Image 1 (tube, helix red, strand yellow):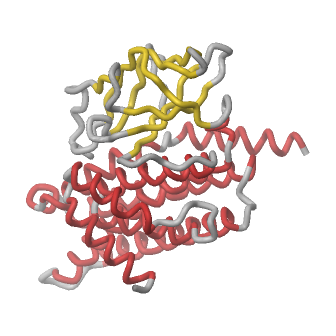
Image 2 (image 1 turned 135 degrees about the vertical axis):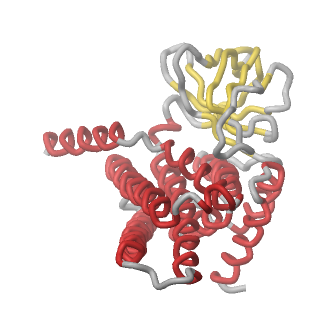
Length: 333
């Protein structure tokens, strides 16, 4: 099959997920050998795959992206992934902490990790924890092991209902280190993974844009100037975001997106894409009105999913962080 045919095939499979978490996990397991690693020379194709999945179903995109990110991290560490569905749990939260202590030549984890998506359905995860000397380190953990408890009942979101991201408690759980202290955050792939998430956001926005375009085409009357304005603005915004994403993929493959340059690139791409996504959400809502939100399950779910998913972007705080980094780099010259 050609690249276009493969994308169409996987997009069709993603559409069949229809928000179901187990189907999303099954898709992740079946797609992993057909997805390139970031930095392998086919990074734009990887981002295009994420976009295609996001256009079809954001639950599918969310689960597949995390699974592929875990495999990419292991590859970057020179490790082969064990069989099963993977996640990456690296978020921090107030009043909770996960600690790693050395024991009998290995490590054990104790404490609580917040924002652990799909922990109840996954087999393994890469989890960050605090070490005794004040660093953060990444660990490979069997989520089915004794001492691992995924909390239930915490996820009340209307978006991504099948991808609950609650806390997981670890009680003296055996864990294998992946990389050295602070390697997870310092490696080039950390920034690249953030761009992959943005590709999923963009795919979700493209799905909404398709619904707005089909609505304009099927309307009983000719679209007025306001409808045409929204169509034009959304098309231009999505075009700009796609160009930005494709350029980022090529920069990754050319090895010009590493270190500080990679972190700045990732911040820029995520800001550009998130800004476009939020504009698309607003314009689609203004263009279509309340009827699709009230009467079309797929559209209503896509809107709710995307509104929640894009909030992984920290909006003005991420913009301020980029500004601080740029100022620091200019001062260092």
